[in-house]
Image (cartoon, rainbow, N blue to C red):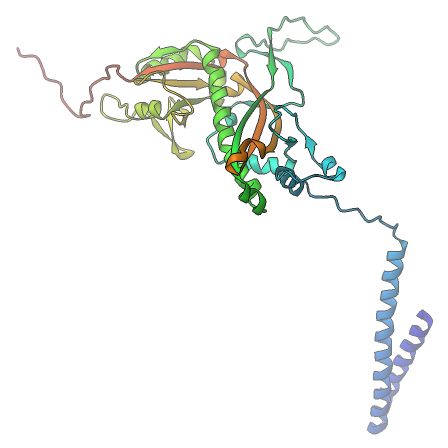
Length: 392
């Protein structure tokens, strides 16, 4: 084809030159006839060029190594929904889902939530206030173990080294902490009609319900570790709090420190004023919705999550909680259903479980304070008021 295309191009060139010569000689009619022949040749050249390009593309494809067509794997989330509805799974489907632990005779086969569904649940959890965002989270693939760390208060410096010399021996004060992953679960009653009819929204419904309970439970366990990690120190004013920060908290930890309190504690602190009526809490320049105490950002949790000590005494935790608490995360959610448990009510019970352990790491990295709202506060006076002078 390439030889024929070359001959056509040469013929087209000759026809064009001949037509030009005839026009110069004044033979217009003859020139028109030659031009028409040139147009026909041009059309043939164009067609053959397109065919040649197609041949080259076909050759390129044939030179490629054949790719085996991948068999479409069943979608894990649809298999999970099928399993939750109590449908029998094929051997192929069971291979897609990981089976969980059978911990109850009333609950049918439990399944580990697939990664994409777990990601969705984690996204729902971000809608709620989580203390987990402020601690050291470490994924783990084992149900128990230990970790070591060096406290900030006993941290040693690097030693000067000499060329060719030995590294001086140190005796670092390492602490070892054990962890044991715990199952945290709850039951959700689902109508059999919803379970059978719902398609796209069933996992979303379950995820939103479970995420709220999970965050509340995680918060409770982290606060429990902090409260049990060291005895509470009572304070009666913001000045007392500042003194404890200045004297009891390592300055090296202040960059990552936050103040954690509940609604009652924040309300009490937010109403405190200096002796000329100015609020003692400062606005956070990086976030208008936050306040600061002594330059440290305040994070407020609900009273239900971080409970009061009494009707008039509130918790205030201050420190670098990444250094204080390690959250060992098994990164697993497990779902299982039982129709038998709700047989008389025509409902199915769904059990959802997550696995983790919240372990106190360094008690020196934070303050555990309680503030008494009944303490007498200094009187508020006008900024420009004048003191009465004694007579005489």
